[in-house]
Length: 278
Image 1: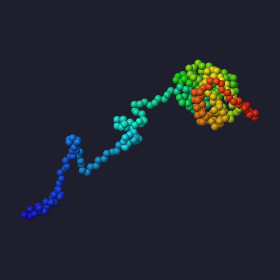
Image 2: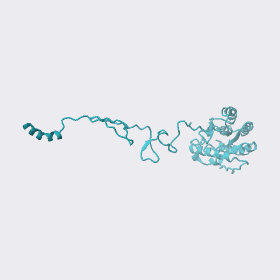
Image 3: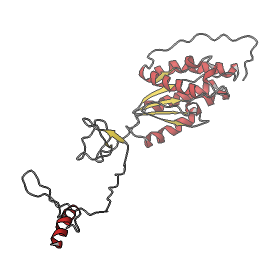
Image 4: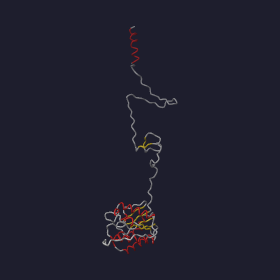
C-alpha cells in the first residue's frame, strides 16, 4: 500500500517537470496548395548574420518606391530613370570638327572662338604668315574659314608702302584658296608712343577699304579697344584676359556681319606737345 501512496503523491510532479525531451522534428512550412515548399532546420544556440550589401555608387530614388537603391543598377533590376546617364553600349559624344582657323601673331594668343582653332606665332610678320598658310591649310583640310590677324610686328619698321605690298601679296594668295577669308584689323596701343598709334590707325583705315576691293572680309577692332586701357596688359600692346574675351567676341561678330563698304573713322587730333616718335 505504501508504494501506491508514493505513486499518488509523485505523479503530479512527473507531469510538471519532464525528465527528457525528444528533438523537435524539422518544420515543414505549408504553401497555399498544401504541399511543403522547403525544410527549415533550427539549431539551438547558433546565431546567423547576413552581411549588409556594399554600396557601389551614389544612392538614387526610384520612381514609385520609398526605398533607395544603387544608381548603377542594371535595367533588368530597376527601371532606368530618365537622364540617369549613358548606357555602356552608347559611345561618348565626338567633338565636332573645327572649320574656322584663327591665324596670327602673339596678339591672338589664347583667343578662343566656338568651333575655331587658334594658331599664334609670336613675332610673325605678314610675309611669315604668307609663307605658312599653304602648309597649315594642308594640315587642316576641313577648314573653310580663315581669320588672319597680322601686321603689328611690321609697324616698327616704319615702311608703310612695303607693308601694303605684303598685304597685297596676302590678298593674292587668299584669292587662290577655297576658303572664306577675313582680315582682323590691328588693335591700338596704350602708352607706346603716338607714332606707333598713328601708324596702326593708318593701317586700319587702309585695310578697311583694301579688303573690300579684293573680296576679303574685314573685322574692325580699332574702335573696340581705343582708349580702353583696362583691356591691355602692362606693356600696353598685348591684351589681358578681358581684352582677349572682347577680341574673341568681336571676331565672331565680324564674321557674321562682315563689312560690305569702306568704314569711316573719326580724325585723330594729336596734341601739339606730343612727340611723333615711339
